[in-house]
Image (cartoon, rainbow, N blue to C red):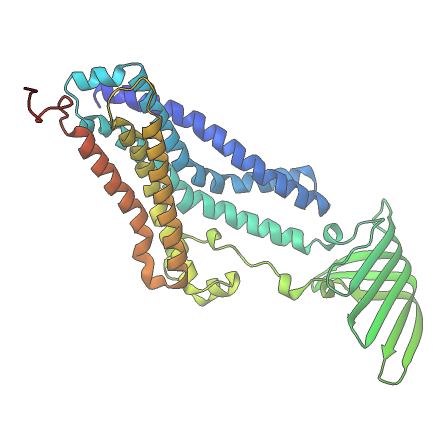
Length: 377
């Protein structure tokens, strides 16, 4: 690689590192705050919160990298122009096509980073995150059993614990099950223990009472049963409609291209949606070189102006928004019909066409104003 190409590439990579760090930090902190509130309210520790936020980081990076590439190329080109380095390169005979070569190398480099993330790191992180979410969902003690407040695990069930002892005993336990409008069952116990079995968690209540209120069209019957020990299946407190499905992003691209029945059952998704996710991964790395070239090519349009290049920057942002909008629209179409998967690649193709057209305009020779109109008489 010639020295001038290495110089431009180094400038862009340095700026890319800065913008990527800033954007990832903003996205990640925003995600971490929501996770922190959710997990802490479920009784999880700070280490669990840190683990979850770390597992979401690869997905955040894959989304941010093309935007960071655009910002780095636009800012770097503007700096090269303001410091007259770009003018010197063009005066030395370097055309816009020639100047675009290190920018394209820069964009392809970022695209390879995105490809590594979306095809390898993100599926591994999402699979681990899904497994950890399932483990926490099964941890009934952390999810429902909190002292000093009324809990509502599912509609029609009320749970209250006065105190949780240091050895894990639930002191003064109350459970009301009113899911059946014709039969209301209330459990009270002096203390209770959560016992894990192969069939799932069980609640062992000691020294308590069961009140069963049955309603009929004509009357109500109340039966009271006292017990020294009673076992209750905590699995009934988990809403079957709220069962977590595995994320499509936890599976490999090859498996998503040809989804089997097991994958569809685990995710609850359709085959169209699985294939759409696979083609979205295949197309996402192309966003990085397109974004980098847009940020560079647009700033080559127009001549020198003392007001700066804000117009070119605005057009570059508009072009990037158009490309991103086409990508989102294509994903929605493919999600409903897998036969439309080629639409996923329309967005990067349109972006590449815009870059070629802009570079062609920038490479056209521009004569002095008024040339060809004839000299005044």
